[in-house]
Length: 366
Image 1 (cartoon, one colour):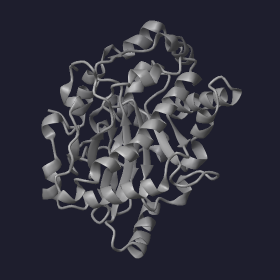
Image 2: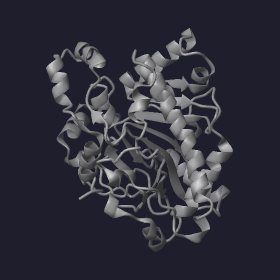
Image 3: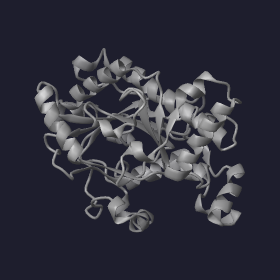
Image 4: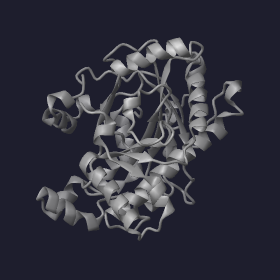
């Protein structure tokens, strides 16, 4: 199993932002981004706007938050709106694949070295998450108010003044990077630059720092998040303090300037299957164990909590989800399938309905 830096292309946002869209450099970089997503469903992003200092401030804050006792965290829990703002406690969310036949079929086709460690138990994931909305409220009455609920600030007094500005600042870095990649992907696919970005103009985007307590779940081969795709359009993430160096490509500053960017299930439909959602699982490996030992030695006063700075970019909840006609021909050519078959794979529905369907699959909505 190769490291990310040996497999995934690195897309240079600095180049994209510094030159006109029509320049040969930008056109080639956009095609590189689109081809990476068609081939791998994921890519790495270099963005020098990202500050390592801001990354550290964000990580320290969320580490301290998730280090609170469970009874304090529960005060910020909102199951009545399917946990779409506030905290989701560990062992709440279940990975979908263990009971999803299409996912099981994909696993069966994988090389044995690339298969997930275990999906048969369908155990809830031992991870916590806090969702912070980073979208603009729609200027119309949405059919899906629970998916567009306002933010909540942690109830613990120590976080009240610093939570919102820290979330907004770090979330803005990630949102800007994701939307720029969406623009590059559209250009690389031969679509107008704003095609994908406009579809998510009023999306309920979520900054979702995700935490795993490595004092409890730090043993090698512990599954922190079972094999799955995510339900949104795109996912961006950057790992927390002490990530092993070989997870980032050479030639770029580390870790502040590199995001991982991955297509998710909603892009299957809107792009007609041309770009498929990427599957992943999160597992404690030898590098994690080594990092745990180093953190204990070098930072004995800090919580031993693994943080993933995850950003979920959504299409607008009331957007009609269906394949883009201009891409159906390309999908038909690649997969040797007729138009009707491509369209039938992705029946039209509202984005909000698709989200609700998926939330039920992963035990976050009843």
